Length: 270
Image (cartoon, rainbow, N blue to C red; front, side, top):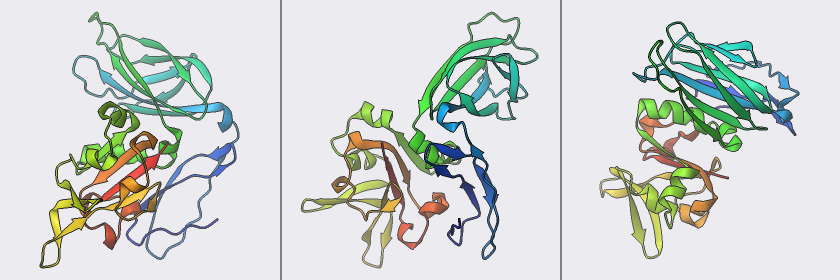
């Protein structure tokens, strides 16, 4: 199997899916004009497993806690990194007892439900010992489709670097926009430019040519460019996630190119 990457891409995350069987993810560095062989190992039990991503922090200060021993069913399976994060892949479906232990903190034991093909997102607060507090646990599940498309990874880094905005289905449901373009146009640096009954999203920070023509944002639907008339293709209730990039500086490699210099809106359906 071969794939081609844009000339300015420097890193790619690869995986394969064959029916109900998927492979482990591999991140590789890219060099222009160079080819690479990548080995992807299949997870034969993936159809009966899920994934778990956790962040461990101090319950008093909200600072990440590193080197926390993470055990599942009594067996140590991971340790948190400097950001207090851990990832468990290929976890069998069902209810598991997750145990966290770290020097200077009270142990935390919490039941976790793992569902088939779903990533369970955990935020865990460890209480400094001997301070008496109830452990803090927040849990959420992620869309498998958005996970595969790299939405959550881009959201994780994009929210820390800045310059981009991300909506989930829950955000859209909470705000209940009549058209998704109306919700996007409420973001700073973006407005709706209408001519007759047709409207498109444009940047208020850039223009085209000496006449100052509005600079339209490029629109992608499930990874395919659809021009700029977003509302003609999708309704708010059909959307699983939205990524908004206001300029070329914040664009991921997969949405780059000359057409995207004014910004990009990437929409993923459920």
